[in-house]
Length: 116
Image 1 (tube, rainbow, N blue to C red):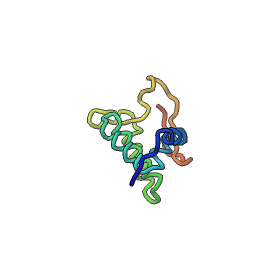
Image 2 (cartoon, rainbow, N blue to C red):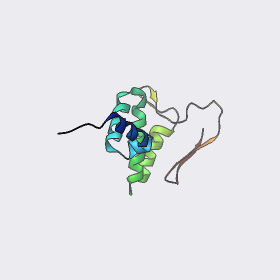
Image 3 (cartoon, rainbow, N blue to C red):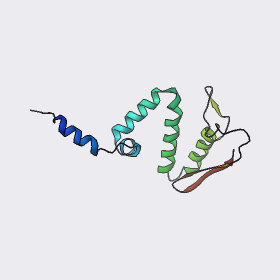
């Protein structure tokens, strides 16, 4: 018969479990699925999940890197891009006149650079 561990045993395990994003979302498939389901249920996070999906696709791609990079740039890194009334670009919360260059690197490869 299945018996559950005691509360004391559970407390010991609780202190040994790593509770970081990489440990829960990246290393555990169920954590990844739960994270995606949660983000897709929140309107503010749907674009973030799609962005992460494209970046992951870029990392795993061998032949279509340029095409995926251009899609990421066009949809998320250009200021003023609108979809359903939501600005999908990254970095548009910077003050007007801010000219610090934005460089995005993925796996230490130069991906995109422009002035904001």
